[in-house]
Image (cartoon, rainbow, N blue to C red):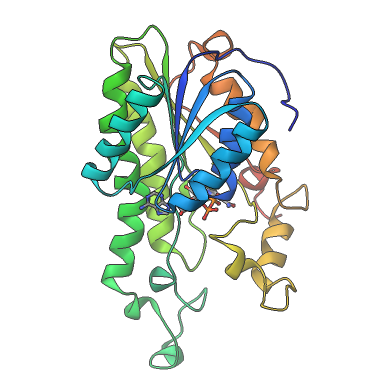
Length: 281
Ligand code: NAD
């Protein structure tokens, strides 16, 4: 991977949650090119380790760790191991997140005829909704509680959260994910203010539409043909295509670089091919 521009994070320790996944493994790879030491955390330990090994093979410094972002104990265990392997955390990327089919309605619009025939708003599963809220919101708050403690006495530290287009205007069918990502944008501002008397900055990236494990079932049929939702998404994205994960890297490097963004705090950068700017007309 070639970075869009160079920044120097030599010897900084970067912790990336959800780094077994598509977007955050690219974040980890990109940040490894800046000279930083990368701790890749994921509930899927194998995926985190495979991605870390790829970075290490490519000459970077990286290690994978098992970590459930919903368990304070599990986060603290990973923290302990990272302290001993790499040292204290300078940059935290809160990337773990996702949706759940139990918190998704089958149809975009409600009609009474749907009752009993499909999953309507009235059938959304409480545990499914809780799962999505917890994974996205608590799964950002808890790792921040653990890793931001390392940052308190640093001259330069950064937290990057991952929001979504849903935070601006909710997408149909996925009320829990939409609400949880709106909470992430809100929490990003809250944290930026709360930590503003320290040297910790907190910002977020709101990706538009990128095909990954978490959304591929909504975007493509089993035979790989696009679903009607894909057609709607691309029709609402003025640039007319999905994003490529590498296209998030410029915003990420800008936000974690003190030289580039030392006075940027509490913002959410959309990287969306114009989706959030387009009214549909
Ligand atoms: P992904 O499914 O490829 O990656 C998510 C990773 O999080 C997976 O590796 C998964 O194992 C891990 N994870 C799930 N639960 C966890 C837990 N409890 N503890 C630790 N790790 C856990 O999806 P992605 O698209 O790469 O998602 C990365 C982030 O980007 C998410 O926060 C997602 O909501 C956000 N996002 C994605 C898109 C998109 O278009 N793909 C758009 C906007 C926002």
